[in-house]
Image 1: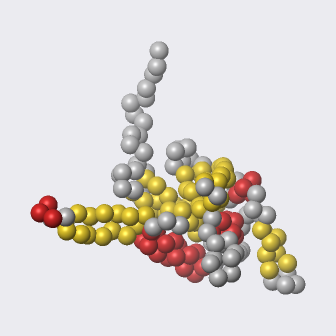
Image 2: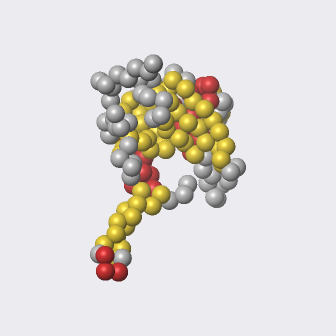
Image 3: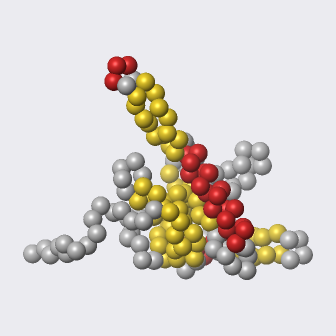
Length: 167
């Protein structure tokens, strides 16, 4: 016999906007040769994840998206004070227990999703100004990936499309 709690939330919708969360699990994977890291959060359902895809600077050939994930979470970082550089151990185990800011939004299906970039929290490594600037950067990234365009579809009028821009 099955039992169902009728008082539980339905639909998978949660508040939109910036939320400070703690990473309780991080899993890496590969899709068609592109690395990604899935983040799962304390006090959030398991089906609500933030997927960070690897992205490479075309001029320098350096990976920056996953590097920024570790940097903004301040995970696996070793700083060389003499050269003012940081080395990042990008093993996902370093992300567990880190607190970050994540931007949640309603996707085209009406469910809560997370933008594929994070922002740090105010700490000894990031000022309030840094955090505000990085949050703005994530918002611009999200807006750029989810452009809404209108076009005329013959006699049926205007059709609105939302297109994800790949990587």
